[in-house]
Amino acid sequence: MANARAALQPFIAEEAEAHGLAARMPSLLVEARRVAHTVTHGTHGRRRPGPGETFWQFRHFDTNDSVSAIDWRRSASSDRLFVREREWEAAHTVWLWLDLSPSMRFRSFLSETSKESRAVVLALGLTELLARAGERIGLMGRSPSSGRYASRKVAEVLLTETSDDSFPPGARLNRFSECVLFSDFLEPIDELVERFHQIASQGVRGHLVQILDPAEETLPYEGRTEFEASEGGATMIVGRAEDLREKYQRRIERHRLDLQETARQLGWSFVLHHTDRPAEEVLLAIHGQLSGQDRDYRYRAARRPAEAAEVERGAGS
Image (cartoon, rainbow, N blue to C red; front, side, top):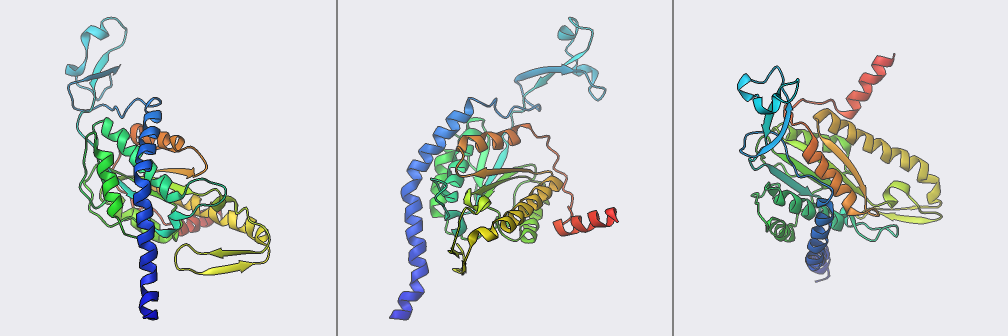
């Protein structure tokens, strides 16, 4: 009986966490809508040129434009030729993935919210913004949806998620779509890069949102400290935690630089967010990345961070 109870203990803990997330979900959804409403006043939508009936703007005539595209009425009042651009009106698909592994449940004394809660708020808030713009939004591996109830549908799916995987799923995504990945991205860089390449090779543009507790950047502990891994249960006791601070900060900075370089090589965006900062800040940044970047979906196999460092050393010798 004791063995059976011990075997069930991890599942009891997971069930308690699932109930905790379910209990917080209504308040997280309200918070997400509040954040989305605040950000709405600082954005201008995801407007971009393309096929459609709605006039967007005039722009200067380019040699690649056809003569029939010239707006002669507007051009008559100027010394330059102008083309009338229409707004893209086709629905775009944006895929979301949230890391709900145990490491995302961490919250230090420096923050009032866990990484998991902030990831949920950001995902739901982004869903609200994109749904208002007429886009289609879905969690990776699920069917996308649109309309005013899109964020509620995403919230309902999140309540059923039980995966503790720290990597995005190997889901098939439609070409020319985009994906936004919310995680602390503290897994080994080579494994993360491999998964990012699997997504990018499908013709999908990605946006990495690294969510960290401020303590994970600064290691603010002093004296004798016991560290316990969020996943695996491993522990480590150090006599003077402050002696590890400088080496730790260099290592986490190196890890982030590798993430940024990988995103750059793939043509993806990268945003860092700390849970002690307002959610509106990062949501506005994410929305800006989705709105303003040129869309070039050609996949290029990028060098791994270790390979890039080797090339740099060779160039310097």
